[in-house]
Length: 181
Picture 1: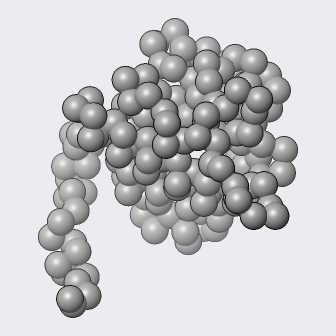
Picture 2: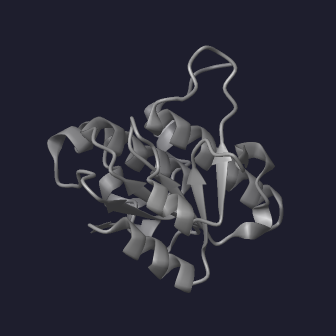
């Protein structure tokens, strides 16, 4: 085993001039009221790695250009399509009317483990919420389902960017490995 060089790693990525036409997972993510610029940057970078189709930043979620976002995004603000929409419910309704299933990453009384999600439910909108309060009641009421990450320790939640990384990579794996592309 040897560690790959930067040149070897770069040889496997989608060239920047072809990123717009690259095949993306039919997954749009709404980031609602996430306050940390570093979490937002991390969410951009993770979204690029998973090749989702779009990020929609809502509420008071900070958005580019911001140096704090860029610090953790490492250029992903240029490779992931994104938009800002003040009203998260307007974004949810627009996606619903376009045929997206709305799924929250949140602990609820009807949530299922993220790894049991039905890959046939795409196109999908995953909603992630505030670091402290999570997904709002209004968005939960407008959602079709919820997924959760089972916790086994004393703490009952993860950092929003970490939880998003776990969920988005499993969702994209489910979609890719179940003949959905």
